[in-house]
Length: 386
Image (cartoon, rainbow, N blue to C red; front, side, top):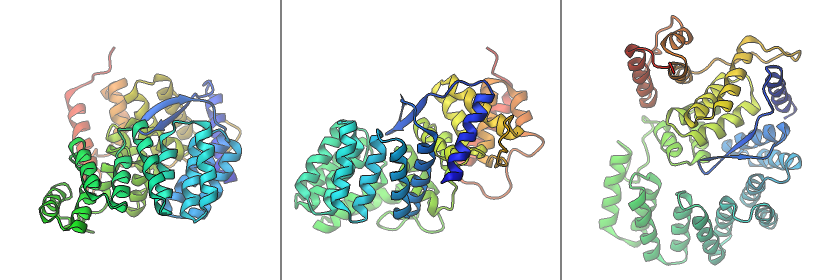
């Protein structure tokens, strides 16, 4: 933890030596980038450690790191919400309720605090309070799928199966591609013996998850990458982190894939966490740059590019930098595309160098799509000017 905090402090030193002003803080809350107050580097680094441990399922380490992050940033509703969620999963329900109360005292209408406490109430069998809390969360954040899915499960547990089915059908009208919603409807239909609904859900799941089984689970030959990308598209960053672990994908590559999918909020949030824990990650810095470019945030784009350049050049600080971790093939392509948009074809080709655009071996559909797009752009000539 000390090493991570030191690395983040070194990144701040690099930014200062490059003449950058102290960066404004930007958070991604349910897919929206929101400018906010300054947060100490130590808190960012500890939060990154906690999020990574939580994704691995190491709840004890995650709780310790979140609580240390809270010492440095006691006014974070998000940190208190994560503390409450993990305390609940560790069976510390009284302490979990206290943490959720602290989160709401900081920000009364913070939807994740209401939603996570509803999840905790459900696990404890407190169904009526759970229903009231999740309905409040849905009112505060109607675009997030987690709330309606959780509400349907609570209704099912209350024995209100017709209401649960209506809730899932309503969600599917809005999100007809939601694998999680179709799986929930499939499970509910099986439980109540609704054969027609079971068959309909199975058909849709076969379409959405090719070669999956009747419950829509992907076969081992397919891997979790498609589900990871779907989670990012739906704004489910924590689920994407868990799927990345199953796919043996680095946390930095989660940020890169979010950027490739145009998910600015998720790319920025994940990349900031990774860069906080490891400022030498070129992939994380590329994801930050691409997210800033897509959102039109020129200052953030400049900071990310300065950090990428300083890291690659060894920096100008007296503090010895960690060796830069080269960008992944997908990150390399995305930065080439960014250079093509902002500077021109020659700059993109210089960045790519003499290596082939295509990396050897089989590639996933998202990488193939970006490869084809960059090839078309570079073959068509240089935009950039004005």
